[in-house]
Every structure is written in C-alpha cells, then in structure tokens.
Image 1 (spheres, chains in turn brown, green):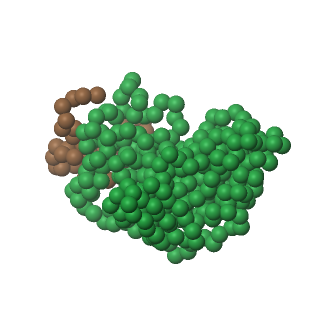
Image 2 (image 1 turned 120 degrees about the vertical axis):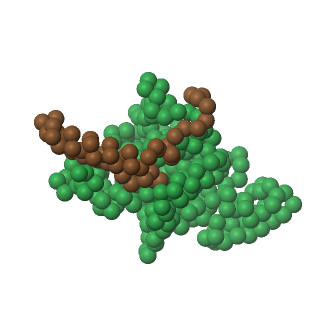
Image 3 (image 1 turned 180 degrees about the vertical axis):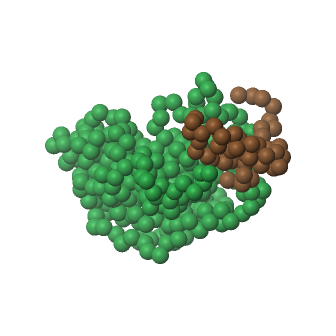
Length: 49
Length: 315
C-alpha cells in the first residue's frame, strides 16, 4: 500500500508470555527507530474536521 | 439484448397482477443519456417504465437491504452475487425475493463514449453490437466492445448465479480473462512509487461518497466515515484522509465485492477506485480460494476460522 515493510508488524502474544512481549516490543521499537519518522501517513493540511 | 425489455415488462406485469410480489425493482431511462435509473414499481400499469439496455450499470441489490416486502428484482450476473451476499449477511431473506435473472452482455462506459466526441451527446441507442450516438450537431456509431466498462470486459460471471425466472437463455462465460493485470502492476511498484501512484489516482476525490452510496455492500447505519465518537478518519481532502477512506472501504468490501463497477460509474470525477477492491478480491482468492456471492451455504472467509488460514505474517 506504500507503507515501508517493517513499519507494520503482527505478533501473537498472550498476557502470560511476558518475556516474549518484552522481546517483541524491543525489536519492533528498534526496527521503527531505524526506519525513521513516518513520512507517508502524515496529514499536512491545517486541522479542519 | 434489447428484446429483454418486453420480457422484463411482461414478467413484472404478471407478478404484480398475481400479487406474487409487492414491489418490482428494475431499470428505467434516466434524464441523461447512458444513465439509467433504478425504478421501483408497485402497480402493474407502471411496468412500461421498465427498460433494459447496455446502460443498466447500477447495482439494484443496493435497494434491497432491510426491506420487508416481497420484491421482484432484475439481476445481472454481478447483481445476483450481491443478492447472495445480502442473504448470507441477513439483510434480506431468500423467500422475500423473486429474482428476474438477466444474462448480461456488458455495460457501456459513458466516459469512454463521451471521450470519442467533442460535443454534447443527446441520445444513445443500440443495435446488433453497435452503439448509435446522436449528438448536438453530430452523429456516430461505435462498436460496443470498444466502449464497455472495464469490469465488464473482465467479467467471468455474466449469468446470474441465483434466479427464479430467466429473461433469456444463458450466455457463454468469458474464458482466459486475466482479471488482475492492473493489480499486479501496482503490486510490483516500490513503496515510494505506490504512494505517488495512489496520490495521483485519488487527487480528484472530493469525498462525496457517491461510490459508497452506489455500493450494495455499504449498508451500515453509521458508516465509519460518519462516526465522530471516536472519529476514525477525518473528513478533509488531505491526501491521507482520502487514502484512508478508500483503503478502508476496500477492506470492508473484502470477500464481498463482485466488481459490479457501480462505484466507478457513480464517481463524479472519474476515479478508477476499483483497483483497491480488486486487490482485496485477488487476496481473498489467493489466500482463501474465495469468490464472493457464489454459494448460499458457505460462510465468507472473514466470517470463519479455519485451522489452515495463512498466518506467515505473524511472528
């Protein structure tokens, strides 16, 4: 659709899998930081409705 | 295809006289050429308003949802598949419907016809595969296959899949049709290129929602774009809002859209937004082997869970 691969990620983590949750969050945050600020889905028009 | 008009009128007259139905939904001539309107008839004397030609492009299944009467509806191939979807989704019951099935040869695209001529077109007729145009100060004849709607050129379900009375004999289905050539062209673009492509495609959009209003699948009492608490998507013409609307509407039609083309037909600025719904249609076919509206028994893919549903995108 035009969003860079890596910006949208899916993961299946149960509330009991706390270690996995921490790992996933850390990895996704790193990937997104590397990609930089989102340039595409950003509204530029002054706020209307 | 034009002899169908008499047959449709006869069927409608008979059904109303015998009180088999309370309402007949068909097509009537519009006030502009090539724009036939929906026609709701409750009395046998009014059935002469009904017509059939290659400008009957709107989807009459749009007018069925949540009705309580017994209804006879004129249905082309695509429309009949939307009727099946409505029955599956409980928007109308099968026993309320008397489906007058019309094997369809395709509809003409008013923009393609208008592009051929400079002046105003006053009248459009048809004869034996030709489209006869009378304009202000000019006349013309075109081959129908050269001015057909794109979705009709790619159609693989011309015959109604559900029918109580046939208006004519079945026509042959097209074979060897590549429905997704334009979708694959967009899929092969890189992220930046896709973004620009969608920006150009959707630039004229004025958020009139004609596409949504013409679509038989869009029957939500409060559409996601009208919701304000919470506001899911802005109403502005910011490119991001426009894209969100079109992408999300396509997702809501996933596994349900039959590519009837009513959305593109309705668009006042001529946007070819069917590429989005066709992408979802292709994905449903690839991922779930699903084609919309072919079976009254099977549940759609976004309705059911199967153990072998694709999940390679989940880590």
